[in-house]
Length: 346
Image (cartoon, rainbow, N blue to C red; front, side, top):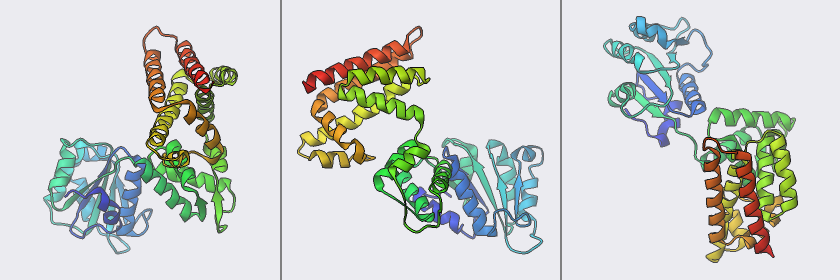
């Protein structure tokens, strides 16, 4: 049975009574673990209860495929349903699952966790096609989904967070649910008393705790290039290279800046105000960066911004060619961008 992504969390909170095994798979390891733990709690209340929750090593099932059926049929010494956790499941566990299906249904739920599985995977196909089994995919969160998740985790810790801060965090933390929750927990500790009603997670606090020095250095270079500030660009590039920031990292930061500029300027050219165009970006431009970004919008019409983005993309590609000198390629590309900005500003 396939469980749609929209229904996955509800299913894990209350698995269907007729389901004997749930396969939870995907590249988002944090989400896989979170949903597996939700299934275990739904069945056994405490996922760490040794009398009602047991774990099996998939390697053991290669030699003893009947072991899974034995564990699924075992009774809890304290009463209630049992959960059997099978972490790191792969195609090798398919015989064990078939052995389990050949026996009468037991009052246990087997929870199998796996990494990415293609549609041709035998494990995935078995769980999707057999009515008493369920397959739940765990895809990466979208940028909006990650931002909503950040807001949810903050709310659980009595932290208020502005949407633009949540968007910035989503861009930095990626899409893995476990990593997002871990970093929000770190932020809650950083802010002190997590039980204090109304505590606010500000952009400054987020940057101080999570902002990576490499990203900050690369972003600064990107801002100076877009603004045409040749003197500060030269100093920032020197510091970045001296600090070990890779040229490709810097070029990608500049590319992100110009991609956002292109989107905002294109909207402004269609009649949208600058403020609304900046506010529509995901994440929106932080308040302290709005003046600089608005100035850059006057320097970079959409066609020119697209041209700069193409230049930066080609420079990144050239950095990966054997025998190239990435630092020189990066420096030359950003100087060309900065000079073009200065000419436009003049």
